[in-house]
Image (cartoon, rainbow over all chains, first blue to last red; front, top):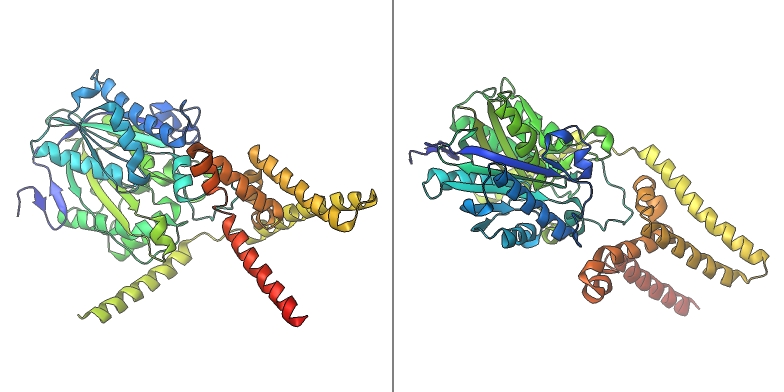
Length: 336
Length: 154
């Protein structure tokens, strides 16, 4: 086995890359949520001065990446490669952001697990010795996602209680080899889990089995106790998915149960009429690159397991009767 | 293990998970939703009835009054959709706002507004009936069937 591999699915970084700078942008609704003040920028409108939702999302991602670099006084071309993705077809937002950023670009799609995916691949590129400084970023926009996956903005529909609200949010993190800062120490690449869920209004249920499997495999591969991490946080399972995941923890015999929470539950206030919570690539990206990494910097959290969760839903195959495949990737971030 | 057994196991696991999901899933607030649908749907229909009655009182034929009532309700629904109010109402009233003719108008106007950014041909033109299309198709099918029944049954 490779010196950097642990168990079946986990990679272990011999020279753990550091998160040296990060930035997060959120939309107006997300800004009103309980963590509103922990993000770098709270937008006051959804269009960002653009004509379409797609252009707005692209600008959102571009601005977040630029800010993550400028916080350290770096210009954008001082990053060697950008790993980014979003929810739109052909990852349009990331492509158009990269068009203007003009740095080498690897586009990724992992639905809402994309932030974890980009962090893992970025960390591998650094530990592999290919690069010195890379950026991992993702975005989502409520209205660009709605029109692609669900309904027109003004269409009158009643959402089911298990439905989640795609967040308008974006997060970007700059990773460096051998610098001070919270380190990415290990990562577990998840398998697709599909338990036959077909309800597009219940993404949490589609993703929970994948999250359970990845967390279980991570702890097993790394030979860690379930309570090793100060916090295990999933991307966007929402209240339904998180409740299901807790059931899986019990089934898989994870005792003592992990200190667990979910970005999708945290992003909004219960009063904000979002039903089961937040979803979207930007939800976990902004929560990580906003409150969570700030807490790590302050030493309030020292061991974090960030588990990006994605429902790989295709509207085409869904109408053809296919179920929704779920995926989850885990990134261990530690102050060492 | 051969393939059929494997598939059976998967199906059993999926069924077990499905029942767990059902347990965890929050139930919709059926009574509250029904009351909202009844009141708002009722108010929309009552508005229509008031318009019809007034038109008939002012000497219009019943058939013409009905047509004008439909057109008026469609206009009002389109207006409220454009003002961004119809979806706020529908969020609570559900079928009460979707089933009446106003729901049909909302589906068309909302699609037209949403896809205007792709232009008048590939956007508005191509997508305007994206939601309302099935209603039209099956409306036509049913009207043909009813027409045939009328012809056959005399």
